[in-house]
Image (cartoon, rainbow, N blue to C red):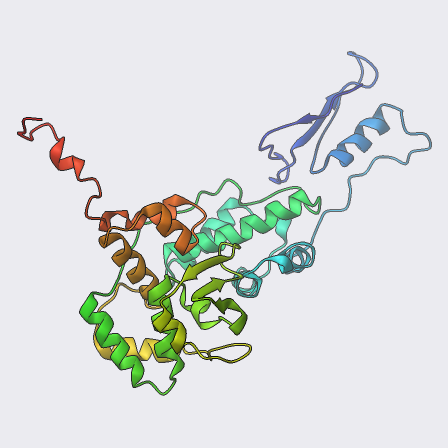
Length: 337
């Protein structure tokens, strides 16, 4: 049997398209004519081999499959139908992917190259951050990989493009007096829900959307259970009896959308925060003070709902004992221990 070889990162020299399957043999022996072909799919390679090897009865002269001319928007819609609609963040993700598609002029997917993506990325960096561009690349690459697993396509055109490195931004959090000032400003807001949502976020380390979106079923026995979270796992956090009494006693959603009122109140306080951290500042504040007061990093991981401890470790330096052995055990330390 003539073997079909799979070439890692095989790029066709004739049309510069990735064709990982290769057939190269002489059907009539070592002195016969050589038959060689490069193919996008294994089935295509099999048909080529079998035709020239005389194994297909009444076979028509071999021809490659018609080229796949589907455009990016078609694959985005297909991915959504087969997989994407099950994701918890699909509304936001789908909107971003369609926006990317429009900015890229909805290209034919098989013609996308690493150079095309690099050019798009460079243009985007003039308007957005490195983190945003990396997120876009993650979304697109994940879509291609899923469609490969579903046997809908054969190649991820940007699989070899590495994400850009970026400096972890400074983390903003509120000091005790700034917390009091913010809460007083929130009391003055037209949307009265903002004050209580902020207190819940400060008390449980929740993201603003998680605290704002709780329903009556999620609050019981001085506890709040967060569902449909970013980490896709429910988590239950205890709250004080005092805070529990402040939470409305009604059915269904407990709060209206009030992130706008929060942002305006925060702006009125004059507190300066690193760019882009307004909506997460309460979560960062909870975690920072938790560690400064002697909290355990593993417990904090559970409270915040981080899948990996690496995500939580960015708060470790707030602990009073964090890496304190660097003082006691450094080579120029004079101690008698």
